[in-house]
Image (cartoon, rainbow, N blue to C red; front, side, top):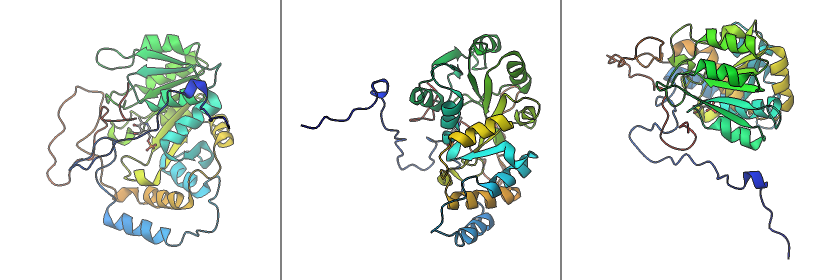
Length: 302
Ligand SMILES: Cc1ncc(COP(=O)(O)O)c(C=O)c1O
Protein backbone atom coordinates (compact mmCIF):
# COMPACT_ATOMS: atom_id res chain seq x y z
CA UNK A 1 0.00 0.00 0.00
CA UNK A 2 1.64 3.34 -1.02
CA UNK A 3 2.11 5.89 1.77
CA UNK A 4 -0.13 8.98 1.78
CA UNK A 5 2.02 12.06 1.21
CA UNK A 6 1.87 14.59 4.05
CA UNK A 7 2.84 18.23 4.31
CA UNK A 8 5.90 19.22 6.32
CA UNK A 9 4.86 18.75 9.96
CA UNK A 10 5.40 22.46 10.72
CA UNK A 11 2.90 23.30 7.97
CA UNK A 12 0.31 20.67 8.84
CA UNK A 13 -2.22 23.22 10.13
CA UNK A 14 -2.11 25.45 7.06
CA UNK A 15 -5.29 25.88 5.06
CA UNK A 16 -5.59 27.00 1.45
CA UNK A 17 -6.11 30.74 1.11
CA UNK A 18 -9.71 31.57 0.26
CA UNK A 19 -10.78 35.23 0.28
CA UNK A 20 -14.41 34.09 0.45
CA UNK A 21 -15.56 36.64 -2.12
CA UNK A 22 -19.35 37.00 -2.24
CA UNK A 23 -21.51 39.08 -4.53
CA UNK A 24 -22.11 42.53 -3.01
CA UNK A 25 -22.80 46.06 -4.17
CA UNK A 26 -19.46 47.28 -2.86
CA UNK A 27 -16.75 44.69 -2.31
CA UNK A 28 -14.24 45.68 0.34
CA UNK A 29 -12.90 42.36 1.56
CA UNK A 30 -9.61 42.35 -0.34
CA UNK A 31 -8.96 46.12 -0.35
CA UNK A 32 -9.12 46.24 -4.13
CA UNK A 33 -9.82 49.45 -5.99
CA UNK A 34 -13.56 49.50 -6.61
CA UNK A 35 -13.02 51.49 -9.78
CA UNK A 36 -11.51 50.14 -12.98
CA UNK A 37 -9.09 51.96 -15.23
CA UNK A 38 -10.30 55.11 -17.01
CA UNK A 39 -11.50 54.28 -20.55
CA UNK A 40 -8.48 55.78 -22.34
CA UNK A 41 -5.96 53.90 -20.21
CA UNK A 42 -7.95 50.69 -20.53
CA UNK A 43 -7.98 51.07 -24.34
CA UNK A 44 -4.22 51.62 -24.35
CA UNK A 45 -3.72 48.49 -22.22
CA UNK A 46 -5.95 46.44 -24.53
CA UNK A 47 -4.08 47.66 -27.62
CA UNK A 48 -0.71 46.86 -26.04
CA UNK A 49 -1.85 43.39 -24.94
CA UNK A 50 -3.04 42.50 -28.43
CA UNK A 51 0.58 42.72 -29.60
CA UNK A 52 2.11 40.61 -26.84
CA UNK A 53 3.46 37.34 -28.26
CA UNK A 54 2.02 34.25 -26.60
CA UNK A 55 4.66 31.78 -27.74
CA UNK A 56 7.64 33.35 -25.97
CA UNK A 57 8.51 33.28 -22.31
CA UNK A 58 8.38 36.64 -20.56
CA UNK A 59 11.55 38.66 -20.22
CA UNK A 60 12.81 37.19 -16.96
CA UNK A 61 14.20 40.45 -15.58
CA UNK A 62 11.32 42.73 -16.72
CA UNK A 63 13.67 45.51 -17.92
CA UNK A 64 11.01 47.74 -19.48
CA UNK A 65 8.70 47.64 -16.50
CA UNK A 66 11.55 48.21 -14.06
CA UNK A 67 12.68 51.16 -16.16
CA UNK A 68 9.16 52.66 -16.10
CA UNK A 69 8.87 52.17 -12.34
CA UNK A 70 12.37 53.54 -11.78
CA UNK A 71 11.50 56.64 -13.82
CA UNK A 72 8.34 57.15 -11.79
CA UNK A 73 10.38 57.18 -8.58
CA UNK A 74 13.58 58.79 -9.86
CA UNK A 75 15.62 55.69 -9.03
CA UNK A 76 17.71 53.47 -11.34
CA UNK A 77 15.98 50.47 -12.92
CA UNK A 78 18.42 48.17 -11.12
CA UNK A 79 17.12 49.53 -7.82
CA UNK A 80 13.71 47.99 -8.55
CA UNK A 81 12.56 44.37 -8.58
CA UNK A 82 9.06 43.28 -9.63
CA UNK A 83 6.99 40.39 -8.35
CA UNK A 84 3.70 38.58 -8.83
CA UNK A 85 1.98 41.08 -6.58
CA UNK A 86 3.43 42.47 -3.40
CA UNK A 87 2.71 39.02 -2.01
CA UNK A 88 5.53 37.47 -3.98
CA UNK A 89 7.84 40.29 -2.90
CA UNK A 90 7.08 39.56 0.76
CA UNK A 91 7.59 35.83 0.23
CA UNK A 92 10.87 36.32 -1.62
CA UNK A 93 12.12 38.76 1.00
CA UNK A 94 11.62 36.11 3.67
CA UNK A 95 13.07 33.42 1.43
CA UNK A 96 16.20 35.41 0.69
CA UNK A 97 16.75 37.42 3.86
CA UNK A 98 14.84 35.49 6.53
CA UNK A 99 15.20 31.84 7.55
CA UNK A 100 15.65 29.98 10.83
CA UNK A 101 18.50 32.17 12.15
CA UNK A 102 17.13 35.57 11.10
CA UNK A 103 14.00 36.47 13.06
CA UNK A 104 11.36 38.76 11.61
CA UNK A 105 9.98 41.61 13.72
CA UNK A 106 6.41 42.71 12.97
CA UNK A 107 4.28 45.45 14.54
CA UNK A 108 1.00 43.72 15.35
CA UNK A 109 -1.81 43.88 14.45
CA UNK A 110 -0.75 44.08 10.83
CA UNK A 111 -1.03 42.34 7.44
CA UNK A 112 -1.25 38.60 8.00
CA UNK A 113 0.91 37.59 5.01
CA UNK A 114 4.14 38.43 6.86
CA UNK A 115 3.59 35.68 9.40
CA UNK A 116 2.30 33.22 6.82
CA UNK A 117 5.40 33.55 4.65
CA UNK A 118 7.62 33.52 7.72
CA UNK A 119 6.10 30.15 8.57
CA UNK A 120 6.70 28.84 5.03
CA UNK A 121 10.35 29.90 5.22
CA UNK A 122 10.86 28.77 8.82
CA UNK A 123 11.58 32.31 9.94
CA UNK A 124 10.87 32.96 13.66
CA UNK A 125 8.50 35.89 14.26
CA UNK A 126 8.78 38.45 17.05
CA UNK A 127 5.51 40.37 17.34
CA UNK A 128 5.81 43.82 18.89
CA UNK A 129 2.38 45.05 19.94
CA UNK A 130 1.25 48.43 18.63
CA UNK A 131 0.12 51.05 21.13
CA UNK A 132 -3.52 51.61 22.07
CA UNK A 133 -3.90 53.97 19.13
CA UNK A 134 -2.33 51.31 16.84
CA UNK A 135 0.84 53.34 16.33
CA UNK A 136 4.16 51.53 16.18
CA UNK A 137 5.72 51.21 19.63
CA UNK A 138 8.99 52.75 18.54
CA UNK A 139 11.11 51.95 21.60
CA UNK A 140 9.98 48.31 21.73
CA UNK A 141 10.43 47.84 17.97
CA UNK A 142 13.91 49.34 18.08
CA UNK A 143 14.87 47.06 20.92
CA UNK A 144 13.47 43.92 19.21
CA UNK A 145 15.14 44.89 15.93
CA UNK A 146 18.60 44.69 17.49
CA UNK A 147 18.41 40.87 17.40
CA UNK A 148 16.43 40.57 14.17
CA UNK A 149 17.33 39.79 10.58
CA UNK A 150 14.28 41.55 9.19
CA UNK A 151 11.81 44.19 10.32
CA UNK A 152 8.58 44.78 8.40
CA UNK A 153 6.57 47.91 9.06
CA UNK A 154 3.34 48.48 7.14
CA UNK A 155 2.60 52.16 6.42
CA UNK A 156 -0.28 52.95 6.06
CA UNK A 157 -0.86 49.91 8.21
CA UNK A 158 -3.33 47.22 7.18
CA UNK A 159 -5.72 47.04 9.02
CA UNK A 160 -5.46 50.28 11.06
CA UNK A 161 -4.22 52.88 8.54
CA UNK A 162 -1.50 54.29 10.84
CA UNK A 163 1.64 55.71 9.27
CA UNK A 164 5.19 55.22 10.47
CA UNK A 165 7.50 58.23 10.28
CA UNK A 166 10.47 58.06 7.89
CA UNK A 167 12.57 59.51 10.75
CA UNK A 168 11.83 56.42 12.84
CA UNK A 169 12.61 54.06 9.94
CA UNK A 170 15.92 55.86 9.52
CA UNK A 171 16.71 55.35 13.21
CA UNK A 172 15.86 51.65 12.88
CA UNK A 173 18.17 51.35 9.89
CA UNK A 174 21.00 53.28 11.55
CA UNK A 175 20.84 51.58 14.93
CA UNK A 176 20.38 47.93 13.86
CA UNK A 177 21.79 45.49 11.32
CA UNK A 178 18.31 44.31 10.33
CA UNK A 179 16.94 44.77 6.83
CA UNK A 180 13.94 47.08 7.24
CA UNK A 181 11.11 46.65 4.75
CA UNK A 182 8.38 49.30 4.72
CA UNK A 183 5.21 47.97 3.13
CA UNK A 184 3.63 50.93 1.34
CA UNK A 185 0.96 48.97 -0.54
CA UNK A 186 -1.41 51.84 0.30
CA UNK A 187 1.20 54.57 -0.05
CA UNK A 188 -0.73 56.49 -2.70
CA UNK A 189 -3.47 57.11 -0.11
CA UNK A 190 -1.06 58.79 2.31
CA UNK A 191 0.08 62.41 2.52
CA UNK A 192 3.07 63.53 0.48
CA UNK A 193 6.27 63.17 2.44
CA UNK A 194 5.22 60.00 4.24
CA UNK A 195 6.97 57.55 1.89
CA UNK A 196 10.25 55.95 2.96
CA UNK A 197 11.49 55.58 -0.64
CA UNK A 198 13.82 58.61 -0.25
CA UNK A 199 15.65 56.74 2.54
CA UNK A 200 16.74 53.94 0.22
CA UNK A 201 19.49 55.91 -1.54
CA UNK A 202 21.48 56.41 1.67
CA UNK A 203 20.55 53.20 3.52
CA UNK A 204 21.42 49.81 2.05
CA UNK A 205 19.24 48.16 4.70
CA UNK A 206 15.98 49.98 3.87
CA UNK A 207 13.64 48.77 1.14
CA UNK A 208 10.07 49.70 0.25
CA UNK A 209 7.28 47.55 -1.16
CA UNK A 210 4.65 49.11 -3.42
CA UNK A 211 1.93 47.54 -5.55
CA UNK A 212 -0.18 48.30 -8.61
CA UNK A 213 -3.10 46.40 -7.04
CA UNK A 214 -4.61 49.31 -5.13
CA UNK A 215 -4.45 52.92 -6.41
CA UNK A 216 -3.45 51.70 -9.89
CA UNK A 217 -6.56 49.47 -10.30
CA UNK A 218 -4.50 46.51 -11.50
CA UNK A 219 -5.06 43.81 -8.87
CA UNK A 220 -6.00 41.33 -11.60
CA UNK A 221 -2.58 41.59 -13.24
CA UNK A 222 -0.65 40.81 -10.01
CA UNK A 223 2.21 43.26 -10.12
CA UNK A 224 4.08 44.50 -7.08
CA UNK A 225 7.58 45.88 -6.75
CA UNK A 226 10.34 46.60 -4.27
CA UNK A 227 12.66 49.59 -4.30
CA UNK A 228 15.94 48.81 -2.58
CA UNK A 229 19.71 48.97 -2.64
CA UNK A 230 21.69 46.84 -5.11
CA UNK A 231 22.50 44.11 -2.55
CA UNK A 232 18.81 43.77 -1.68
CA UNK A 233 17.54 43.90 -5.27
CA UNK A 234 20.23 41.50 -6.46
CA UNK A 235 19.34 39.09 -3.65
CA UNK A 236 15.67 39.29 -4.57
CA UNK A 237 16.50 38.66 -8.24
CA UNK A 238 18.54 35.62 -7.24
CA UNK A 239 15.74 33.90 -5.30
CA UNK A 240 12.70 34.81 -7.41
CA UNK A 241 11.03 32.51 -9.91
CA UNK A 242 12.27 33.85 -13.25
CA UNK A 243 8.92 34.06 -15.02
CA UNK A 244 6.67 34.95 -12.12
CA UNK A 245 5.38 38.13 -13.79
CA UNK A 246 3.94 37.08 -17.13
CA UNK A 247 4.28 39.00 -20.40
CA UNK A 248 0.71 40.34 -20.30
CA UNK A 249 1.07 41.68 -16.78
CA UNK A 250 4.43 43.27 -17.49
CA UNK A 251 3.04 45.05 -20.53
CA UNK A 252 -0.23 46.13 -18.87
CA UNK A 253 1.69 47.44 -15.86
CA UNK A 254 4.09 49.39 -18.04
CA UNK A 255 1.23 51.11 -19.88
CA UNK A 256 -0.60 51.97 -16.66
CA UNK A 257 2.55 53.35 -15.03
CA UNK A 258 3.35 55.45 -18.09
CA UNK A 259 -0.23 56.80 -18.26
CA UNK A 260 -0.62 57.25 -14.49
CA UNK A 261 -1.45 60.94 -14.86
CA UNK A 262 -4.84 59.85 -16.24
CA UNK A 263 -5.74 57.66 -13.25
CA UNK A 264 -8.35 58.82 -10.77
CA UNK A 265 -6.41 60.50 -7.95
CA UNK A 266 -6.97 58.80 -4.58
CA UNK A 267 -8.30 62.00 -3.04
CA UNK A 268 -10.80 62.19 -0.23
CA UNK A 269 -9.34 59.05 1.27
CA UNK A 270 -5.96 60.16 2.48
CA UNK A 271 -4.17 58.96 5.55
CA UNK A 272 -2.15 61.68 7.21
CA UNK A 273 -0.11 62.29 10.31
CA UNK A 274 -2.49 64.99 11.57
CA UNK A 275 -5.64 64.51 13.60
CA UNK A 276 -8.05 61.95 12.16
CA UNK A 277 -11.12 63.46 10.56
CA UNK A 278 -13.78 62.24 8.20
CA UNK A 279 -12.76 62.56 4.55
CA UNK A 280 -14.53 65.40 2.72
CA UNK A 281 -17.56 64.41 0.67
CA UNK A 282 -16.56 64.28 -2.98
CA UNK A 283 -18.58 66.45 -5.31
CA UNK A 284 -18.14 64.59 -8.56
CA UNK A 285 -15.64 61.73 -8.70
CA UNK A 286 -16.22 59.09 -6.05
CA UNK A 287 -13.36 58.61 -3.62
CA UNK A 288 -10.85 55.84 -4.06
CA UNK A 289 -10.89 53.18 -1.37
CA UNK A 290 -9.28 53.72 1.99
CA UNK A 291 -6.98 51.03 3.33
CA UNK A 292 -8.90 48.88 5.72
CA UNK A 293 -8.42 45.63 7.42
CA UNK A 294 -10.89 43.26 8.98
CA UNK A 295 -13.05 41.42 6.51
CA UNK A 296 -11.78 38.10 5.43
CA UNK A 297 -8.71 36.05 4.87
CA UNK A 298 -5.40 37.74 4.41
CA UNK A 299 -6.51 41.32 4.58
CA UNK A 300 -7.03 41.62 8.29
CA UNK A 301 -4.11 41.76 10.65
CA UNK A 302 -4.34 39.24 13.43
C1 LIG B 1 -0.37 45.71 3.43
C2 LIG B 1 -0.39 44.91 2.18
N1 LIG B 1 0.76 44.61 1.61
C3 LIG B 1 0.82 43.89 0.49
C4 LIG B 1 -0.33 43.43 -0.10
C5 LIG B 1 -0.20 42.58 -1.32
O1 LIG B 1 -0.83 43.14 -2.42
P1 LIG B 1 -0.66 42.53 -3.86
O2 LIG B 1 -0.11 41.15 -3.72
O3 LIG B 1 -2.00 42.56 -4.46
O4 LIG B 1 0.33 43.44 -4.56
C6 LIG B 1 -1.58 43.72 0.47
C7 LIG B 1 -2.84 43.23 -0.14
O5 LIG B 1 -3.93 43.36 0.32
C8 LIG B 1 -1.60 44.47 1.65
O6 LIG B 1 -2.77 44.78 2.26
